[in-house]
Length: 193
Image (cartoon, one colour):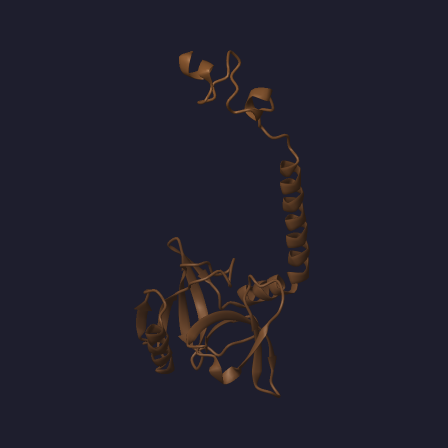
């Protein structure tokens, strides 16, 4: 029987060390995901069930937990380089680039994500393949993002050239001039009426 521990507090350096220690003791635990790097697979605030890497060894396409700069990061493995004992990892939301980590630094693999009272399995073959397909469509996502950005820029430029609602009548150009008489404070007519 595996022990389970629920950790749902905001991330801190201390909680990162505690989670690391718990996982190294072969725990299966839930952690709260923070940040957008794994969208749409794991959203900000989702609860993710993690299994220790020694219990559930990571595979290509697996989402793994590893330490980086005193924080714990969730990213997807896109490739192994066995000769150098490293894994290439990236977030699902990233449009380009990847990072490398030593395989020995991987603490845990994601089993499932709990979102809106629903459990979504992440450790199945189809879920891993879907994640890899999502990774390999990055050039298309970059193109879509660029088109979307240009469309947004065009919309902003068209709104910049719309006629302003400024009133160009002459009385707005001369603040002390009134249609009936000069209402300047130093004017005799302005004081007397």
